[in-house]
Amino acid sequence: MSNLHGRTVFITGGSRGIGLAIALRAARDGANVVIAAKTKTPDPRLPGTIDSAVAAIQAGGGRALGCVCDVRSEDQIQTAIEQTIATFGGIDILVNNASALFLAGTLKTPAKRYDLVHSVNVRGTFLTSQACLPHLQKSSNPHILNLAPPLNLESRWFAPHVAYSLSKFGMSLCVLGMAEEFRDAGIAVNALWPRTAIATAAVRNLLGGDESIRRCRHPEIVADAAWQIVTRPSRECSGHFFLDEDVLREAGTTDFSHYAVDASVELLADFFV
Image 1 (cartoon, rainbow, N blue to C red):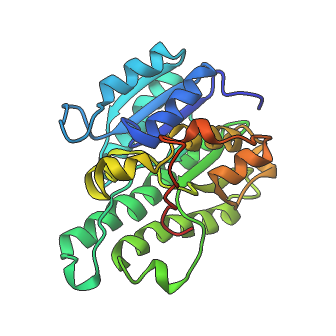
Image 2 (spheres, one colour):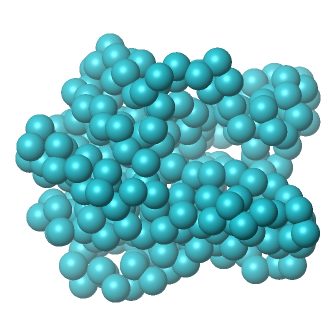
Image 3 (cartoon, rainbow, N blue to C red):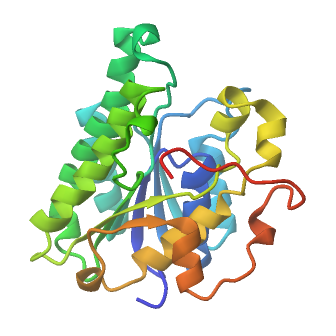
């Protein structure tokens, strides 16, 4: 596929940050974009809602559908997919972007926080993929893309926040298993992860505020890499754990300075890289 014109992209948690950037990149091609996210009412701590995302996608050239969807709810996932099929007739690409973050050691992780990161990150990814697969099987170039890290099982990535790391690597294991399970069906299943920290609300609110944001790249670098992946022939590109910068280098990008929030400072490496 040379672009995403007319393709239907279902994105979880796409009302802001990386998910919204991926949505807007697809909109530039004239894609049908589904924002399946929780935020319907504006929150001063988390800019962006389903409605504002839909408006931005439409302004960017795409068709958009907003669905209130908490990926912890099997019923809400199914309803969002039914709305998608009724509106656009199918699903070509699933982006499992929704994620919960909780960075604490074992003794400081309450059960409800453990349950949260696993319910959103692993269970939500599994259930959304499961519900989309019957529709992806009907697509001519079906892709599942998980925003999940490469399978780097070093203890240093687990020790500071065991619960969170387990949940994110659970998303990666979904890629490992589903890519092989659906290889013969021609459904590509891949992971994408940023090499550096990305300027999102999570970084600002939880990982150091504006000073950390200065050392990030904009979400558009992940969106551009995602576009490169999901426009590839699905039968020729599955089971990979991509880093955004590597994907773009392979596509010919040599200057990454425009992705930096502040090109004069050293970039923060992301987790798991």
